[in-house]
Length: 340
Image (tube, rainbow, N blue to C red; front, side, top):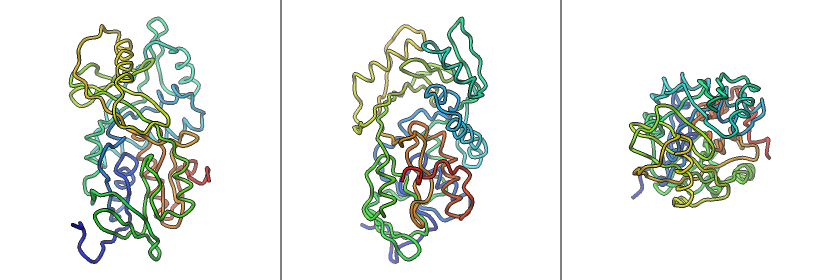
């Protein structure tokens, strides 16, 4: 049965996708007084298969990012306290640690980029207080508050006067603006060439995490091959990065290797744990930064944050919301035209 009654409903904006980027964009638009609907296709959400890291310092050091890219992540982090307070997302933690491996090199990178840190060469530990985290289940639920969330799959788009008609498995709806936050999914039918080209830039990356009921750490601990972080009343072990993989069925061998690395990072003797292993598929762009902005009149993208979807969510949401209002964009470096 169709979800909608006739006539077809109309919104200021429709966001296709209910992950971190989609819900952050929808929440920001909602904060600005726009009538927003989110189309949630269900299934495995990559933003839920995550630790919820808000970690510019560690991510910049680990990936050896340029000062320009580090600036984007730093500006994204600066938006989080006000955004969390406005949306009810729980932002917590002010300490993240790296143990072992190339710790001296990571400390040098962190210093070069100007991140606060403490490096203890004797214990091979690097600590920063610039990173934080959210718990994805709580964050997703908080961001969805006050939004019209439609559990359906988007099928196709069609231009409809100055706006767009979105056909879904639950019926059709209209919007002045449509935001594609579809992760690594294929292009929808009806997309104009510019939008199809933007979607074609996305490469899938599979990631595994393990949810543990036991509280193993009180702050984020990273090291070669794994991290362990608080998650609710328990912990999360992560995470793999597997470019080109789309299967969401956990791979036992990869999970075992990551667990072994986690015990080494913690410096503990392995012991039995009950672990809920999960796999999700993220999207990345050629330069590792997301695409956020308009690709056709009234049609915007919020795609490709790699493994930093939670960190970048409020920034991407602000960029998209600014463009729907015709405002100057705060972060033009994320515009999809850089690839087209």
